[in-house]
Figure 1: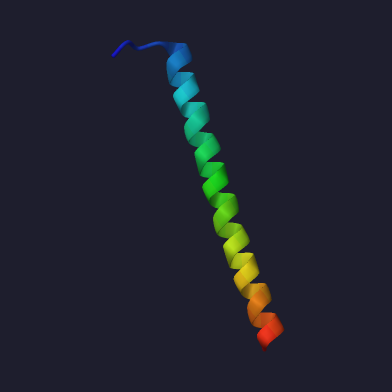
Figure 2: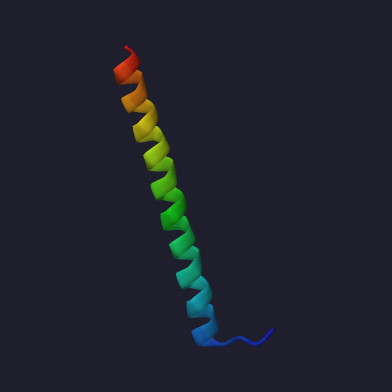
Amino acid sequence: MEKDPTNMGDVYQMMTYIVVILLSAVIMTVWLKRRGRRKKK
């Protein structure tokens, strides 16, 4: 595999993008669960 600085930057950007999406998804599920619990009591 060729070691291109631009290519590595692309991979890094994509990884950070995926991490952000995963984090937001986890936060949303946790928030919804807490909200649901409050509603049910």
